[in-house]
Image (cartoon, rainbow, N blue to C red):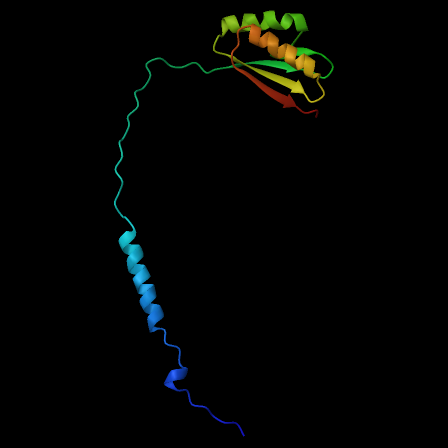
Length: 132
């Protein structure tokens, strides 16, 4: 025979204190949250009266077989500096990008970078090219 047990008031879970805590936390977060719109200064930038020229690059490639290319034209190592000086004289705003093959000699890369720097180009970037 199964005994039936009646649920007493003492056996029930009283959630009133939990609701009180939740409401107090809700009030706390509402009060501490600021809804004020922050003010800022609108900056109106002046427009330039002189259009700027797009900057270009001098592309210097160092191949694994010891070949050197400047803007896709083959040059010898001693001629690298004079060719870059010529391009830099025509376009002083240009920067140089030295692209070396992964198998290129490090000495060749350093020599080319020295020639580019001595030709007067201040901004030099280095990149690598992968074999297809």
